[in-house]
Length: 428
Ligand SMILES: *Cc1c(COP(=O)(O)O)cnc(C)c1O
Image (cartoon, rainbow, N blue to C red; front, side, top):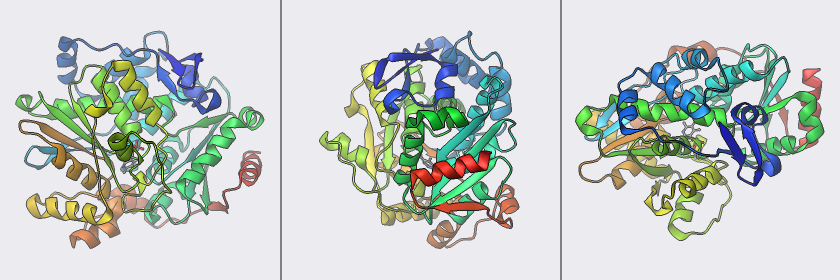
């Protein structure tokens, strides 16, 4: 697989290099040189396969035969949980991506990345530095916990992730180090970017990223869009619409790569009031505003770092941005969406999926099958969900286990020098 840097087209790398570097010169994202579509027959065959086997074929097709001989084992080991498609209401299905160990769709990408890095690190010690608005950190911490030769430093904004999310990050210990930063997510992300620009620091600690800028995560997520269609009744597969709750726009970029591979579908961008992209799509102006805290905290991002990839993909495929449907919801509308589907069918959503469902319904046309992504288990947002729906929801085992444990974290302001000092001291 060949990839190039979106900001410097002369920087060309293979998959292994892109995974190890995370991000290219000048903070440019790596992007595939080409995406060869499957034939119609191949797509049909793929849709008849079970999740793991199909995902192995898709990823082998994308990555190529020359790299990563361990790919099949990595996929089987990483994707060891299901992604059921569950009907929520008429013509609207939820792809439940929250059946993994940290109950978020990010388990797919993080578990795949952890195993790929283990396979390609070649004896080098690695340090994963990641900023999280909640679920990334939990998924990454869980995916890398106990991996030999790899340390993980997870930064999260103070008071802006749920106590449960924090437990999933800060109770693991061992090779997982938690930092609570008194700032918002964007500032955490800026610290990560600075660390990557710091050549000396970077080589010294074998710095790597596990954010959705890492191409391995993105490619892993391509696979479950096929899984969704495979689970639709066969007479419902012709006009599929995916509604994706967007934060950094990694998930939807993965979906659009699935489309570029030949999975026929249309896409809807679903945001909360941090709606830089919906406003861009309607006015053509890129005008990020300060990030606002909402119920759907994993989408509280006003400078989505994967958006350049989304645009690059549209350009590469000759698609028009105007084909991308979009919508955004306030918290009050999000609550209404949760209550509406619960009253209608008893289906329980959490704020992220509820936004995707509502924006999906607003954009769904006659004869289309709508699929919205269930990116987190409702129990991860338990207190909000219980308050909004007026019903109790049980805590899954994965959360029960961590809830009684104590958090161990380092607290700091968004100060780069302090971050650096802490990391060096912790790793030595
Ligand atoms: C990360 C996350 C999102 C946003 O995904 P992106 O790939 O960043 O767009 C949506 N919902 C939940 C629950 C998440 O954790």
